[in-house]
Every structure is written in structure tokens, then in C-alpha cells.
Length: 365
Image 1 (cartoon, one colour):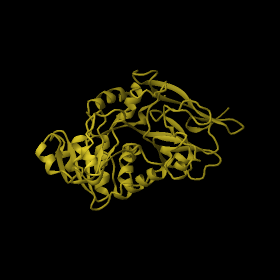
Image 2 (tube, helix red, strand yellow):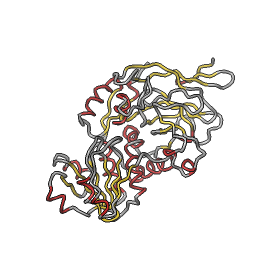
Image 3 (cartoon, helix red, strand yellow):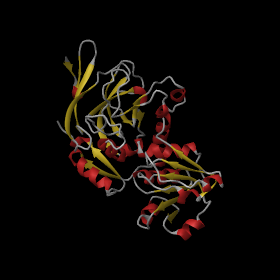
């Protein structure tokens, strides 16, 4: 076995493995603790990356707790990855050692179905391979995420980062950013569009920044007045309190699109009348049940309720390029790797403005 720099090892057949370290939950609900493991052999079309920063997503907390019943353990979370290339397979043409790159929520797909050919790998007919808590398409070994020192990813799922963006703040674009950018693009938001965003958290604050960047008229909807000042600082044009019945009535039929970022079970009915005829409310927060909804506002206004996942690889690259042109970045708090369990607790209390990012230089070993 021949050992190269940055922990990459190889043999005379050019097979490469990588010993690395991360933070993992050994079973559902466990605290995250240091975990030594190996990344897969470097295939001809693979890119090996040293992770510099990794975002902390609310879905990481759900997955560690197995709230959705799909968790696979041991689990190294993290699907908002920013790093530098340290090795490439023989067939890689897009990247070279030293390049600054990003990896999002998926690392593979069948590449053959209509959805993959259409650039929407997130809806792959055979199921996309998630960055963690999934199974490799070739070996079926467990995929492990970005709360680690290194990752190996198929070239087609690696993204380029515009040079002008602050690397320490890019990571949340790979999930929170694309999760909100995709429906804004799908519903053709642009100058003159009237967009409302329900909830001003990790997803919501990105939805506001991106919709403003697209030229839309943006309103934030909150349960109380507590986030009005933040909404205005982020570029929103107005703030609507959902518990104010008079204000809600005045706002009826006032929006073309509503992005719903609320991550828990809730009632959609109060928001449906805010849509104009043919308007759409798109759910990007809650995965699971909702409260019973009254269909009357939908039927009498030809209004729609839809859901949206993330975007495909091409759309995610488009997002990064858009953010580069507009200098749009999330609001982040940088933490050390050994602070992750405290960060999970704080995230559950909504005690973060608005995303945690792990500085992976704090992970040694």
C-alpha cells in the first residue's frame, strides 16, 4: 500500500482508500461522538475532497433521531459540504487538486431515467443516493456525510464555487439555499412577483434573500412581531403577523407564491386565502403529516398546495452562480466540531441566526 498526502492511500493498481474521522451517532437518538472509518476506493470518475466547512441542517437532527424512520446507523450526518479537491480518478475532467468545490444532499443517481436526463436527479426513478444514511449504488455500503474530514464523490455530483463567495458561509446554500431556490425558479419568480415566506429560520431567511435577489416583492409571515426587524434587514418589503385576523384579511389574494418553511405539523388553511387566483403554496419545511385543511379556499380560488424537495445538480450550480453574481450568502454562526451536540440542542430551541456551520479544521485525528 502506497500512502500519499492528505491521508489518501493507494496500491499498484491505483486503487485508493482513505482513512478518515468524523462525528457519528451509533444508533437513533445517540449523541454524536468521534468515529474513525474508511472512505471507499477512489473510482475512475471519483473526486476526493478534504472538507473545510459543513453546514448543520435541521434534517440532520431529524435523521439522527430517526424521526422519519429511514435512518441508517452508524450515521455521520452532513449534506452541506465545502472543501478542496485532494485527489481525482483517472477519468475525471472537470476538477483538479486544489479546486474549491461543494457537495450537496445527493452523491449519485441512476443517470439513465427521464428525471436524471432532465437534470432533476433528486427525483431519480430509481432513487437518488443521499450524501449520508443511504447505500452506495455499486457496493451498497453505507454513505457517510460531511461531519468528517474527507469525502469521496462521483464527479457529476461535485459543484464549483464562485471565487468571490466566502467559503465559510457557502455550505448552507447546498441545502437551505437550493431547497428554497428550486420552487422560486419552478414558479418563475422575477420582477413583479408577489412572494410570501412563512417562517424566518434557516430556510426562510434564504427564501427571503433569494426572492429579493430575483426582484420579487417579498413579505415575511410570522406568528408574532418578534422577527419583523430581521425580516426588514434581510430585504423583505413587508411583515405580516398570522395571528392578526384583520391584517390577514387585508392581505387576502395578495400573493402569487407562498413558500412554507415551517418544519412541524401545522394548519395550511389560514394561508390559502392569501393566495391570488392560480396562486401556489409550496411546502419545503414539514416532512410528514399536516393538520386537516379546509379545501374551500383552494376550490374557490383555483389555488394549489404543492411540495418541493431540493434541486438537481444543474439547478444547484445555477444557484451557486446566482449567489456569486448577487453576493447572496446565508447568515451563519461558525462552530467547532465538538460543539455539535450543543448546536443540535440550540437548533431545536431555534437559538441560531440562522444556520450553524462547522469549521472542519477543528476536527483533528
